[in-house]
Image (cartoon, rainbow, N blue to C red; front, top):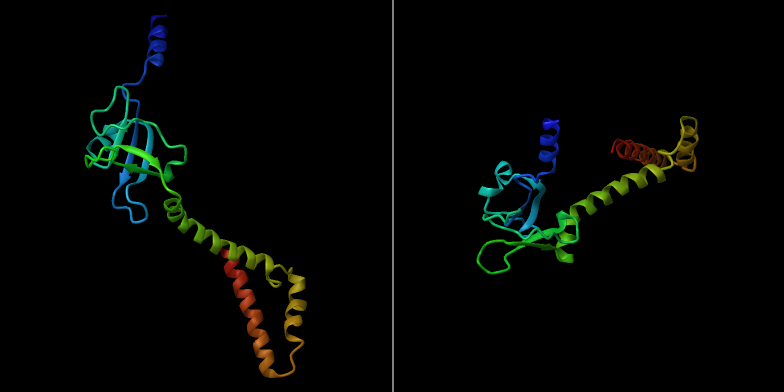
Amino acid sequence: MKLMIWLVSLWLMPLAWADDVVVCDPSDALVPNRVVAYERSTDPAKTGAANNANAMIWSLPASSVRPWDGIAPPVASRYWTCVDTNADGMLDDVVSMRPGEIDAVEAPALAAATVQQGYTDEVTGNTLCTATLTEIDSRIDALINPVSTLAEAKTALKVALKRMARCVRARAR
């Protein structure tokens, strides 16, 4: 019984370290002082934040090392940036990025999504890519039959081969 009471009291006691650690990157090329890591309820000693000049720590009691008030902006942490609110040369707060900064952060993902959409469009819009095995002959014939010269036939075959190659490449993505 005493063991159970001890375990319950241990369970109800607050942890010795209940910290939030924010790590900023002052040399980030896209958004200087962008938050590169946010860990909720971590031990600053274990994460290395206590020795990191680019880290801020929120804790109870208040951290004496690069304290932060712990109030997070109302957006995802990948859209946070660190600021020096009192002009002492130390980052001490976290704010939401401005729209242009968010656009800069999202640009690589948007570019990748555009490329992926191109592959998806190729798979769905390429008549050879959507053909079943029994339909391929007739679809290739439809590309080649209208030609009247050998040069036109070569061009039509190139078109068919390119469509098949694009289909294979798009499906591999």
